[in-house]
Amino acid sequence: MNKGLNRYAILVACATFCLIIAGALVTSHDAGLATSDWPLSNGQVFPKMVGNLFWEHGHRMIATTVGLLTIGLLVYILAKEERSWVRRLAKFAMIAVIAQGLLGGLTVKLMLPLAVSAAHATLAQLFFCTTVSLAVFTSRSWMKARALPAEQSGTLPLRYLCTAALVTIFLQLIIGATLRHSATWDHRLPNELILAHIGGALAVVIVLGSATLTVLRRHSGQKFLARPATLALTLLVVQLFLGVASYITRLGSPNDPQPLNPMVSITVAHVACGALVFATTIVLTLRVFKVLPTPVHNLELALRPQAKA
Ligand code: HEM
Ligand code: HEM
Image (cartoon, rainbow, N blue to C red; front, side, top):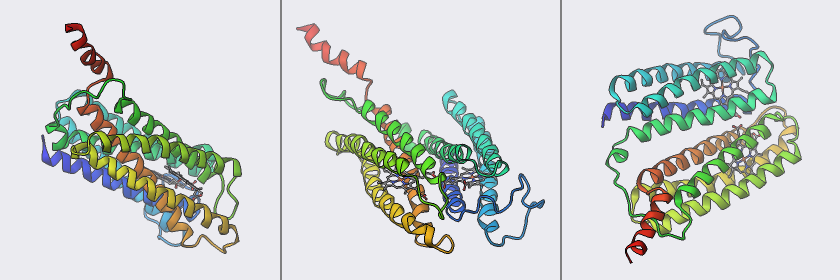
C-alpha cells in the first residue's frame, strides 16, 4: 500500500466534491451564460470576476485545477500501482474529466440546452464516483480487508441489494439533473418531472434503506461495512429533507427579484448531498464485493454439507 498515493487520491476526490458545489452554484445563480465564450471567458484567460462571471469563471478555474490533479493522479498511479484494473480506472478518470470539460464548453456554446446541461451534471457525479473508487482501491483498509463467512443461503445476497441501490440512485440523479435544468429559478418546475423525482426518491428509500439496514443487521460488528452503511442512511435522511426544502423554496423563486438565499444554498446543498449519497453507496458496494463471497460461491457452500451427507 502506498500511503502517499492514497492521500493524493483522497485529495482529488475532495477537490472534485468542491467542484460539484462550484458547478451547482453556477446553475443556482443562473450564471451559465455569464459569458458565451469558451474556452476563453470574454476573450480573456482571467477576466474580471464581476457579477455572475465570478461563479462561471470560478467554476472553470476549479475545473482546470481538478483536470490537472487528475493528470497527476494518472501519472502517480502509472508509476506506483501494479494492479492493471486500477491503472485502467485511472485512465478512465482522465478520459471522463476531458469529456466533462468538453461538455461544459458545449453547454455554453449551445446556450445551455437541457440534454447537454443534464449530461454535464450526470457525468460530474460519475467522475466524482470514479475518484472516490480510486481512493477506496488505494486505501489501507481495502488492502487489509479479509473475506467474511458466506451469507446464509435463502437470504437476499448483499451484493445484489447494494448494486440495486446504486443503480436506483444513479437513475434518481439523472431525473434530478433533468428536473433542475428544465427550468431556471424564474420559472416553475414541470409537474411530471417532480412526480418522477418523488417516485425515484421513494424507490431509493426502499432499496438503499433495505441494503443499509441489512448490512447493519448482518454485519453490525464489521466497521468496514457498518460505517459506510450508517453514513449512507444518515445522508439519505438529510437528502430527503433537503429535497423537500428545495421544492418549497423553488415554488417561491419565480416571484423573487433575483436568485436569492435560502433557495441558492438549499438547492446547492441538495445537489452536493446527492453526490455524497451516491459516493457512500459506491464505497459500501465495493466493500461488500470485496469481503462477501459471490452468491454462486454461497450456493456451493450451502450444497457442500448436503453432498457429504
Ligand atoms: C472538468 C470537470 C467539471 C466538472 C466535474 C463540472 C461539474 C459541474 C456541475 C456538478 C455542475 C452543476 C450541475 C447542476 O447544478 O445541476 C456544473 C455546471 C456547469 N458547468 Fe461544469 N464541470 C466541469 C467543467 C466545466 C467546464 C470546463 C465548463 C466550461 C465552460 C463548465 C461549464 C458549466 C456550466 C456553464 C454550468 C451551468 C449549466 C447550467 O446552468 O445549465 N463546466 N458543472
Ligand atoms: C433519494 C433522495 C433524492 C436524491 C438522491 C435526489 C437527488 C437530486 C439531485 C442530484 C438533484 C440535482 C441534480 C443535478 O442537477 O445534478 C435533484 C434536484 C431536485 N430535487 Fe432531489 N433528490 C432526492 C429526493 C428529493 C425529494 C424527496 C424532493 C422533494 C420534492 C426533491 C426535490 C428536488 C428538486 C425540487 C430539485 C430541483 C432543484 C433545483 O431546481 O435547483 N428531491 N435531486
